[in-house]
Structures are given as structure tokens and as C-alpha cells.
Length: 440
Image (cartoon, rainbow, N blue to C red; front, side, top):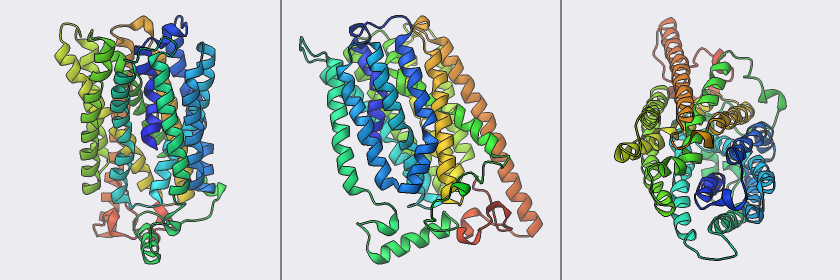
């Protein structure tokens, strides 16, 4: 489902390489505005939609959202001008808003804290495969010589229709929770519930409570969480929305440009799985997040400082660094804050807000990716790099504080306790419990 979420969100860059902007008569900064305004409903709708997911379950909300954005993606082929496409993109952004946050919350109901990062990576990694898929399908569809229907319209038709079909299947496939999963036996459902209490939540599948949704927002650590969540997605947005334009700077044809976006995203998917698996294995988030941010930062600096046409090999290598590092924080940041939040209602609201902030952070990328800056796009790359630096500092500060706090509690109590050594059902007060240790 997220594979098609990513395809329908990012295929605008592929469509542009086939002349969509010229066919629809775009002028000035209208293409950049199209991407920028998408993030407004995409950021504002996350919180309320994720609270609805907590109330009505992922079984109802996730397929409903998918059916909505798939329909909008399909209808993009009927747009005749900028205004028509803009309306459809705004609706697409609203429907897509609650999906990523909804799935992250949904997965916390099924997996323990030491499993969550890799599972989110498998789910989120489909975004990288989607970018590769979109490049491949664009390569094929853009070779259709139809005098009435341009290749970019075929792209919207084919990808949008596939999304709608998958949404219908999902209505019948997804369970509301492990205790109602149709594919588990009764003993397996009991085991799934006990796993959740052992290493995920203080209570299992609690009823919806608006008061509980916002109980963690008064904690001082909520501020650095917001800073981290607002800044890390800028590199992700730059990579997903503008990688075709970045590769186009190498001076190749439309067909080769779309084909050459495949490899960086495919390699990025492998790196994503390896890093998140390592993070889960060592139960460590801070340094894994910082390392991935540094990787994409190097790629951004290289792309901003070299002459691309004179150093095509180096520039293309930098695209691999950008794709390899830009996607990892999306998995580990949301694993990290959910690992330290034992209340299911609070997790739903907090994840909704932080993912929404990340979507609004994408505005920074879109706002600086102006056609005036072509072909180098130095302001875009510089702004993205600056956000990476801010995120690195905030992540290090929060992570180091958590590690020091854990050591302080160990010294005071005369024992060494790791987070996974205590059943989360025993930590009803969360951070107020003497056995509490931060998942760092």
C-alpha cells in the first residue's frame, strides 16, 4: 500500500520529464508551487486522521485513505491546466496525509520495540522501490506514441488504477489488531497480546481516549522531537521529488534520465534494510540516525559544490549517497519516539503530529527548488544540507541526554538495567517508574 502511496506522490517529477508542464501551459514557478502546496494539506491532516485511525482502527482508515488518493491520482490524467491539477494534488495530499503515520501506529500494535525499526523499514523501503518502479514504468510508458494521450497521462492512468485495485483488496485483508487477526489462531492471538505487554505498551489495545492522546506533549523532550521531525524529512523530500531533475543535470535524454534514477533508489533500499536491522539488533537509534543524516549530507554537499557536467561520475555517485541516507531517518526517528511512549493513544496522536511536521518540512525543499535555480539548484541543496545539520545536532543532544539519564538511574539504584529487560506492563507510570530506562 505504501509502495503505491509513494508512486502517486512522487510521479510528478517523472511526468515533468515528459513535458507535462509544457502540455498544461505552466508558467514561472507553477511546477514548484504544485509540489509546495501539496505539503500543506499533507501536513495539516496527519494529526486528526491518525486519531481517527486510533478510534476506528487501521482496518477501516488505511484502505479508505488509499481509495481516496488513488482516485485523485487517476483523475490527474484529466487535468487541462495548472488550476485543475493543483486541486487534485491538494486532495491527493489530504488523503495521503494520514497514511504513513497511521501505518507506523498500526505496526506498534503488532511488533515489539526491538522489532519495530526493521519492520517500518520494510514498509517504508517500498518508497525507494516505488521510485525505482516509477522510473522503469515511465521509461516504458513515455515511449508510447499516441497523438491524443501523452505518455505522462498514461503514467497517471496506470499507476492510479493500480492503487485503487490494491485499496479494494486491503479492505478485506487488514485486521484491526493482533487479537482480531483472521490469519492467527486463538493461541497465537493470545501470544501476540502478551508480546505487546512485554515490550511495547503498558496496556494492551486500550480504548480510545482524547485526554491520553495529548498527555506527553507537556514533556520538555517534545520540543527536540518536533525539531528532529521537522528537519529530517527535507532531504527525503528533495530526493523523492527532485531526483529526476537532479539526474537530468547530467545532460542525458528523457528516457535515460528516468532509467538512471532506478539504481540510486535500489541501492538506497538495501542500505535502509541493513541500517535499520543493525539498529534493532543493537537496540540503538541515536548514532544510526546521525550516521544516515551524515551520509545524505555528504551527497548534498558534493552535488552543490562540483561542476556536474564536468564530473558526471562523481555527481551520479553523490545521488547514491543522497538516496542511501535520506530515507533511513523516516524509519528510525518514528521507531525511536514510539519506543519511548507506552500509551497507545498517545503514540497515535504524537506520531500524527510529528509526521505532519515532517510533511510541512517538505515545504522547505519545494519552496527552494525553483526553476530559476536550474540547473545547479544550489539554494535547494544548501537549505537541505542546513536542515540535516540542525537535525544531527538535535538528535545527538537528545540521544546523549537519554544515555546519560539511563546511566544516572543505574548509579542511583546500584544496578544496570537495559530497556528490554523490563516488561513494559510493569512501567505503568512510564518515565516515573524507577525501572524506566530510555530506549536510546
